[in-house]
Amino acid sequence: MIAAMTLAERLAVFAADLDVTHVPPAVIESVKLRVLDVLGIALAASTHEFAPSVLAALESWGSGECTLVAAKTGAPLPLAILANGTLAHGLDFDDTHAGSITHASAVVLPAALSTGEAERVTGRAVLAAAVVGYEAITRIGLAVPGAFHARGWHATSTCGVFAAALAVGKVMGLDAKRLASAVGLAGSFASGVMEYLTDGSWSKRVHAGWAGHGGAIAATLARGGFGGPATILEGRFGLYATMLGRAPDLAPFETLGREWETLAVGYKPFPCCHLLHAYLDCALALGGEHRLAPEAIAEVECRVPAGEVPIICEPRHAKLEPRTSYDAQFSLPYTVAAALVDGRVTLDTFAPDRLGDPRLLALAARVTHTIDPDSTFPDGFPGWVRVRLSDGRLLEAREPDGRGGPRRPLPPTAIVEKFRENASRVLAAARVDELEQAALGLDAIKDAGELMRLCRG
Image (tube, rainbow, N blue to C red; front, side):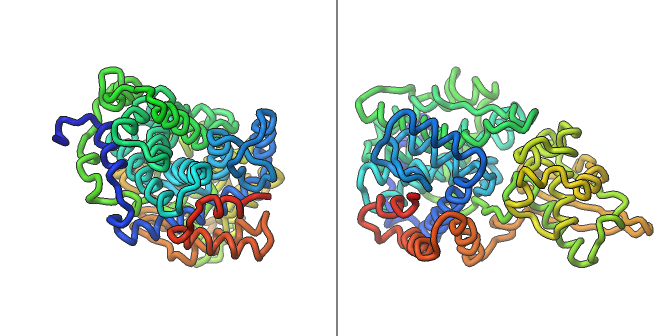
């Protein structure tokens, strides 16, 4: 029976049948911690330069019942998801599933949480919807590992809209037939191009929010009986054929409900492109161990997988002298230099007034890259840094992946501390504590809106 189903129908049946009591406890605990992480990031993002333009645009369209993070006013469901998803992804501090190269939480959680608030469902219902979303976005990307990025599509958005449709539809209580229609409709909303890499502009920041927004529209249309194509993923004019010109590997869809990709989503300890993280770990380790003075460094060579080069190494002039914070967050030379100069990489590393620091830029100019022909990317995001000192010494560090993923996990306490630091940029200490307890106790909350309302300004 399953073999005769389309991929959209498989996902829909999985979503409709998922009972949170049958999900492994480790998966549920992971999702609660991710809720905490995403809400903290969104709160911190509300203080950054792009946030006012997002909120002002939505305010011009009227208010609604759903929380806008850090705002005093609300918005209708699709617009709240758009804003909250944009804030969740806007600092590039949100988690990443390496195999699919998707920022799962920034799409799935704003969609599930805002819909939960609108529908007044329990925290357990939101958790179930989130698991559905995680398992969908990761598999849709895993079916063609690295292929979306290679063609200039941002997989978070192109794959995420389907996950959001399923998560929203699950909260709404749609049956498998309507969930399949929601997935089919979502395909017409799949988008997200990576041209922002050319000039460091802000378009990527809205990709997660747009995917959530599109998924909410698709699910709402399907709830009303509007149909969508069941072959939207693997069909002759489906996602894979039209965007990539290739068929997907069906293997990731065979493990639905048996293996949990949610647990493979890696947290971010640094607020920048996840491809950079292992390099930063290497640079920080070398700098700390050898107490390197930037002026004593003659050259830094990074060995980079070919698939990463267009994202974090090119165009080189923009990577050496970032024009915007977003330029810097995708620059291997800038971030490695910052790690060596400052001994840390934080949100302040990417503040606009830091981008012209002459000491940092001088070292960035001495950071080069060569292709690593043996890399297994995107099976992990590796880092390999060689530092040649002015006295001729050669230092080297190598990591198979950045910290935060299954290969190099971070303890839950590190994620809680990250949340507290981010949330305290906006909320008073008592509210931070209250929000932390609510997120980590989401499975006991009767009305998911209680959690979201703690995020209001």
